[in-house]
Amino acid sequence: MVVLGADAPPFGLSGVHQGQVKEFRLADYRGRWVALFFYPEDFSFICPTEVIGFQKGYQEFQALGCEVLGISSDPLETHRAWVKELGGIDYPLLSDPTKEVCRRYRALDEGTGRAVRATYIIDPEGLVQYGVFSHKNVGRSVEETLRVLKALQTGRQCPEGWRPGGPTVEPG
Amino acid sequence: MGLPSNPANGGMDSLAAKRERIQRKGRIREVVFGMQDGLITTVGFVAGLHGATADNTLVLLGGFVELLAGAFSMAAGGYLSTKAEREVLEREVLEERRRFQEEPYLAHDDLRKALEEEGLSKERAYRIVKLLQEGEEAFFKTFQEKVLGLGDTEIRQPLIDALVLGLSFAVGAFIPLLPYLLFSEFTSLWVAVVLSGLSLFGVGAAKAYLAEKRFFRSGLEFFAIAMGAAAVGYLFGLLLPGR
Image 1 (cartoon, each protein chain N blue to C red):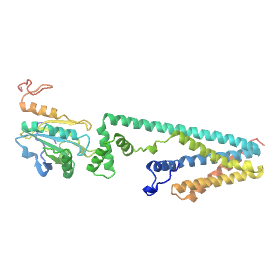
Image 2 (cartoon, rainbow over the protein chains, first blue to last red):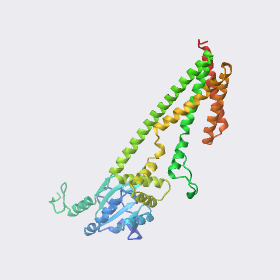
Image 3 (cartoon, chains in turn yellow, red):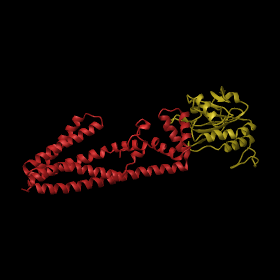
Image 4 (cartoon, each protein chain N blue to C red):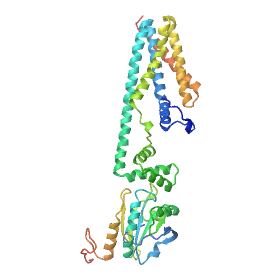
């Protein structure tokens, strides 16, 4: 089970990345930050804004030493068609057909059998440092994820509404 | 208003004509209900009045008043109930349209899911919704049918329903009265009862035929109901201090 400040539950899933199907293991990202986001399904009229949002922010995530991974329970073929439909996505979309990873990350809506909108930030040591859930009708803010990532990377205490470059406090 | 079929398209009706034909067939419910009610009420009423007075003029007078009152009551009831139903459904559709205008992507997603439930793959359902988005009205009509389960045929016309119900009642009610215009006191009641019984058998059989059920059994059922109504009416009339 996922716990803040503890090891992120390990996983290995197949995913689509730049037209190729590859195996992705969380352990392979040790030493880098990871923004892990779960979303309900491909070919939805609600989700694409988020998948596209992470695509737009992807360069910035990369510049901050952070990988982006998207996960839903859709099969790989659907992921591949969806990526094509969206005009190409630079980060991997992972497929979790058994929903085991979604469940381990408390990101499964048992009622619909789909992933909920959950986002996690995992630090280079593989520890969960941030997690947020959103109602299915409300898309997440990629900008907010970037803001939190930058705040975490300061290693200092950041007050409410902190903006990059703003004052921070030495952890006591 | 049957439009002539067009030989150029293989004798197929135009879409509007096809829809109208189905809509008209759907009114069989009103016709059967109106006629059966007209027949049963009037045969019972006439038998009762006959039992009490044995006077053809009185039976005719009373019978026609009952026919008019019954037909009007049926029409009014039909009008009000259809109007109420229509208002509820229209409100529902209006509310959905407002939601659709505020958050179209939710409606898009609902339609995509509905199409998936009908067996299309996620990707194909998505593409169909994408195509439908090119015409707002086309999209909303499809949404209305697939997601809300409300075709335009389901939203009924109160005035037409009222007219069909009232007229069917009047036609049904006229049948037991007809013998009183033609025969003497002695024969009119029996002719009226038999004629009503046969007509109800016909209504029952026709309904069963349209619904593809056993028409003889359904006809008998209706026939027995007519006989029962006439018997109860006549016996009750005998008990009244009319003669």
